[in-house]
Length: 483
Image 1: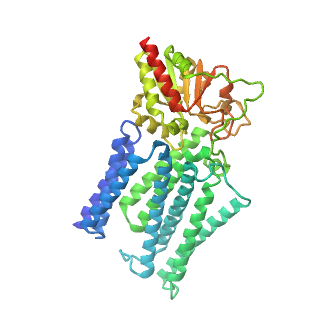
Image 2: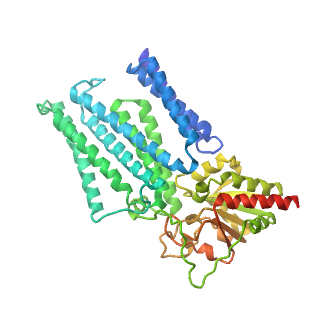
């Protein structure tokens, strides 16, 4: 009877995972989808604790209070600019948890005290090995990604002579360690396991974890800042695969289902992000593309000029427009100017001006970063348009207002066949009648590619902190409305 109840709880959690993921497809239902998926995981955790009689009621309640408290604290204190770093940490600790659980299960088999007392078979050895490998790679890779995103590691591609050879050797060593575990399991089944099996098995698992730890570092440090959104999505997929492998180790249905869903969703998102940059995943992982994004601007190229503008002139242009498209970028997140930007949009709409927000798939530092940022400022979801939906509207747009975006609006992606970003789909803001770019300087974006948009006749540059500039624009629009 108890087993049947546990199985029903796992089934309920799987259903909640699936419906939660389905509702995450739309910004309108994403919050409830996240709540459903979280509820599913809560049900699965409680069911597992009951199944194995691991914790007492007071300990479970204490865990819920402590974990929930930490979650609430993070949700309320982490700035939106730090959300990509937080997601990277979540991915990393998810992978580490999977690796530790698989290692603990292996330890029980070595000691002969596995909970289910099933024989140590080749299948179990394979899943244990994969869980340790993927989970540890996810952990170390995510820590490096966090460092690149937060700035305590350089966002520039980092490499040394022979790095790829070392990476291949580490991968080969990890595969060899998994093969050794499988052979040990096969020997155990045949009754020919070493007289003292603990040492070789433990050493193989430790060597596997060490190789995977270094492998995660060497896989991520050669990747530049421009590709961090793809890396975050891929590491998310890795964390799901590690959880799924651990589910097979534990014969836990809920873990298998949730891990598979996360792994598949992360991989699909990775492919979408690669398509948005017109690059293959292999190119992203091996390309060493992009960097920190400079804060100082280069000199104006000979023969080119920059048309500067001010908040006052920008407000006049916007107020006399009929259609405005706003393009947010990472600079908006850094300046925390989303609330001021929403105020500008509201003021323009009060005058009967059509306002839309154009979102590039790789804008920001993680998938969906701009959507989350604008949602925080209560920008209506029906005003957010994906690149493919809105690109055809720029030629009939009076003003395209670019706030902190760079690479995703760089015409070099269309025009310069020698550019590293050539072929990447971009938002065609240069086709608008007037393009206003709010930016601190003429510095290139994370790709390191200079942006010729800044020097075009139809472009006006507003050099300022985004929050100050947009607040100034809002004040001037109010003054014009009162006049």
